[in-house]
Image 1 (tube, rainbow, N blue to C red):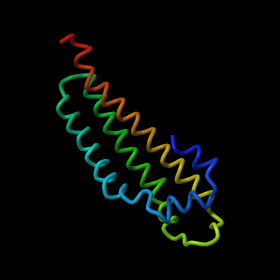
Image 2 (image 1 turned 45 degrees about the vertical axis):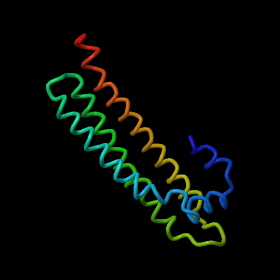
Image 3 (image 1 turned 90 degrees about the vertical axis):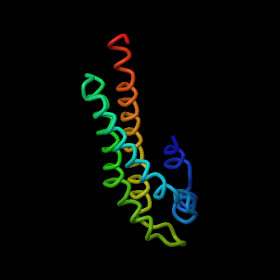
Image 4 (image 1 turned 180 degrees about the horizontal axis):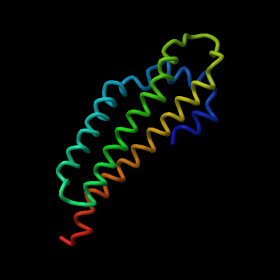
Length: 135
């Protein structure tokens, strides 16, 4: 939801200042990373608890896979862009600005899509036993 203005409206200087130099995302490493890992482990534990309840088990397992895929996508798409962003200094806009911005933003879109699919799968896993068995 943030991506369209950041890609098409914000001036490169604003995007760089907000994202790179003023710590807009500083807490994501400290809070977001551990939350992602906890989410994956929780989804795996839910799969274990639902092992005898099909199809709930498969939806929980799919949710865990989607959440793990989101973290893997972050490491393969976003982290390399972050490494480049960390080298930027105040002054002229770097020549690779557009490519780095596009990779960073589209990487986050992929991560968000996988997390939404994970949430949906976990939701179905939790509802499936109630809907399918009538109990």
